[in-house]
Image (cartoon, rainbow, N blue to C red):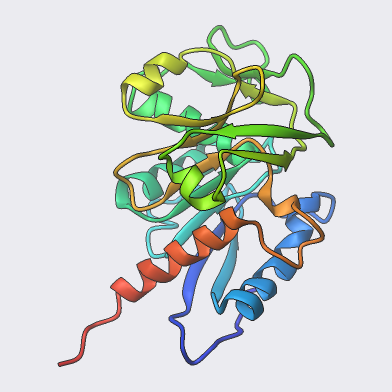
Length: 248
């Protein structure tokens, strides 16, 4: 990439794909086909650039993009880079999506930088951490499909269009503690599994900030983008259009 397809009736939006690209990560291999499908089916054109986690450490790496998607593939080579990209998207109002590892690190960034929980850690990155926010799931979700209950009136519900969905996972870690603190500081947990475990988070007041433990990029065969991905693309297009100078 970049994906340079264009359509005369659309604004081409740029999206930063943050993560350490690998042919061994299924979701990474899906990206080109999903981008083509967004263009062909929805006339949503995204000019996509991969940003390795190490490169994201530099100040303002993702600030000029119209959307930021932190992809699966943890442990990332640079936790600091991923957290920096998430923080920039959150503070600058850039449409953001985090899936699987992106979900986990979105919660980690929020806990540290908004809630003041500076010592919380991700157990995959720091197995000996005394205060892990993200820990191994009691039952691994690698290769699983499972129902998710979506809160009425949430961004997730408006995007997915239903209060129940069945989603695909490839994940072995999830949030374990301090969730009430994150909630008290404004983060909304808008999707849960049938046991009440958090599976979706969003940030009210942000133009588009959504994080899912499931991987919408694994839905189907990649030829029909998941509603979450279409919503991110629409948000990116809106961000791009807002930057176009008005004539007259």
